[in-house]
Image 1: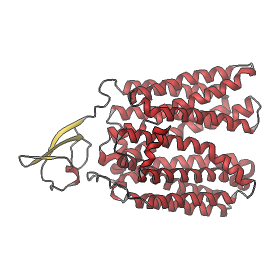
Image 2: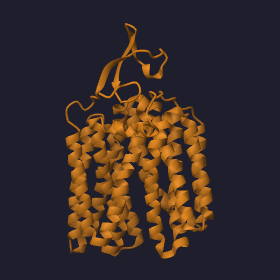
Image 3: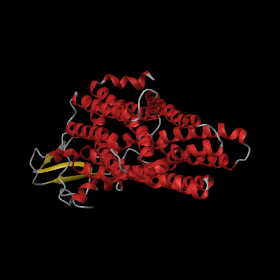
Image 4: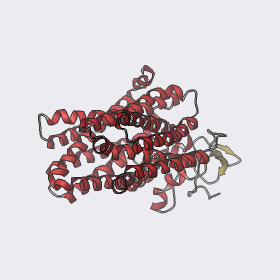
Length: 451
């Protein structure tokens, strides 16, 4: 534990991490309050409202993150992040006053669009703040822990606050969280990113530059399918925990929190030990191992679902949920390291934006599948379908990511003529006979022909 927390000695990272935690707590409070608001507005149709709001959230992530990523490197990082926080605070301030369902949908889209701008910029800044890979790995583990702790802490905090106030006041906590995040970001100087090479194509080409990067490298192509495997497991846990706990086992609502806590506990346990493990084991081994473990856990869930004797099934489900959390953390925690190594530094923000968008595209598929198939055909069919997706995704990831040369990136030695010596693309280039020679991942743009 001390080795993981030692990275907080860096003042800039400490402020950014605290900003992340504060904003996550505010978001968690808003999630609880939004559920209660939806019930006030829509009554028994609250589930449909929340389901639509979740779909809008994912759509905003998928559509907005690449568009922001296309221009993020041309904006001051701190300005972008603070602006996103202020927009989120403004939206949260408006939520208690809505009285129509469509107003909820509009505000949720604005809120999540701002999050789609903030998160990739935040993720891309951390490797520059912590250039040492061991420090960066510890930061990734802390970030994973922050997400897991928020899922446990925010509902408990909301429940405590609701004993003394109405749910509308929870939105005030959300506003405070986003304003606190903005203040923390303002309090530090962020490293300036290396400017991306100018793209001469259309706005669409700029917005999809990060996504195209994912299809050029075997590691990142594998990450696409790893995202799908994780989405299959997390959707099963998020959507159907309440169905298992209350519908299958007939337990209380408090047991739903216990089940979700087991999932978060498994994820946190792995996040704590991974920094030391990754000092000795390759990222490929850990991430692909996590994906294959998901398939095994789905098989275990199938046995629990098909069982008839209830005496062992509830504790078995808790073990399965903890194993899902552990396996997902094995895949997700090293993801930032993988992108950092594979993407050229000047393309890093676009790459993180692409990961943000593409990973949420997977959840946009698996969330409704877990709910609709489970409701219409039964949990057994939902387990079979999502387990099959995880199996295909895991096998695909193994095949797409060759074992040889894990760290190798297809850098191409090439030369440029006619660029000014101070052109941002010529960082680390050397002059040879009037030409500028360097090597990097060649992305088709205005400076490089497609090979």
